[in-house]
Length: 433
Image (cartoon, rainbow, N blue to C red; front, side):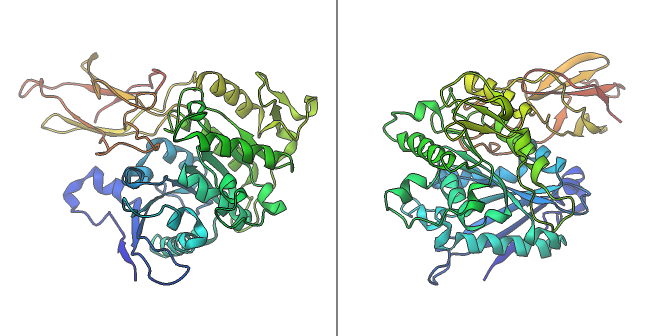
């Protein structure tokens, strides 16, 4: 049995812009199974597809961690504008699973995919392929981003489906130490699994933490063990955070971007390409510089692997400061419209390097307002959508609309909307129609 909440586009026609946006979102829910070796928890998968894409080249999976709070926060994952920008660039779908884990449920019922979650994951891809009329999605490759228990899940999926995985981002979690201790069955780690590009990204403040120290030590142990076997794995400690995801997206998105560029096949359906080691850079585990592979003089089996020069320089900035810089303005808003009642609506894509922080509303050539007035973020840079502990937009997800309550009745005004990215750079202005 499965239940579909298929086309959010089946909203009333009066919904206007929301109707147009909703056609890109799809949802499917599976109830808990009572059968052996099947998922014993319910799960809802939410999917976003770039508008107008003809053929999907992959699926970017944003997998939450353990616990009720993580599950609840994950429901907005597919609505994240910044992750959508990555998906759109590479003609990929963005998938946000949310397991229905209760307070007393064992997280390993889902975060060990061998307990059935891998079957349900594959089933959702097949169902979405049919629902969206994108049959290629069923066999498309994946980028796996996993936080905590999501990293646990991703590390085992790496051993089960290495031929399907473009790259993996382990944010504060892997299953490596758990299977090494014998707490769960140790999987077979094949040469193909070791060839999957991966990045371990624990928070430095997890080190020695009473609750989260295992996330730090487990990530480090996995990195060292895999690099000793020449695995394509890196280590990117976040100096600002503990277990929260912080500003990790500003390095995770460039990592996937670099790996997608190297590994996606020229034609859909062909095998993934191997990572190009001629482009690789390395860094010492405790070092403060990066070098191209051809010039690196250290022990590569202990060194941090970095896929490209551009990513290596971003990595160096991130591990020093917990952030990356951006010198380019965001894309200008599109489809800016003003209604007779003074309501402005618009569309906007996130700045690929630094996301979206706010919008400047101008009236008759002068700044009228910043929307939101005071962007906030408890866990990192202030963003238009806000951000949860687990790197998803805060609820309710903010809409791109603003009402001018100070306009004089009957007056004719000229409005302009400007996007602002998370480092404060402004886009070109877009006038309202």
